[in-house]
Image (cartoon, rainbow, N blue to C red; front, side):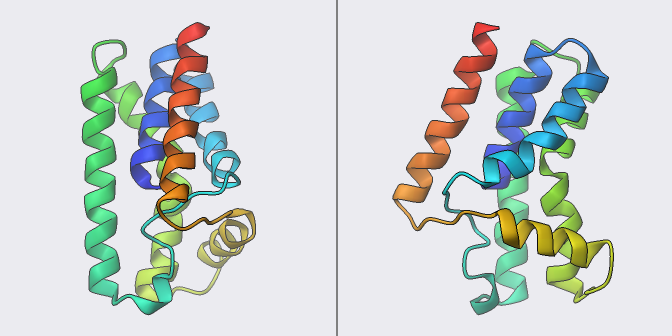
Length: 146
């Protein structure tokens, strides 16, 4: 999933779960679960991209996700809780970044990379974008119904 999708999922969890400890934990756990759903993201074919291109796409995606989550959910939840849930939902990818960008192929970064590589279910655009949008929308509807 894109960082934007993970941020929106973290945001809806924070907006729907009043207990920050539980909400941040659920946001953290959500990452590998939704990455199992076939999806497209900027990391697809990352080896064929320059580090600068991949970094630029990642910063754009992270910024878009944080901004979208803030705009959609800041009225329902405190900023620090929202930020904590968004970061928790994106933390798997954040922890993988040193492996990609710095070549840190040692634990814990190599562990995160190996787990992420095994659980990812990739799908090319446009279908991978549609499955991602449907997943995010479905989770928003689910948490709104609680």
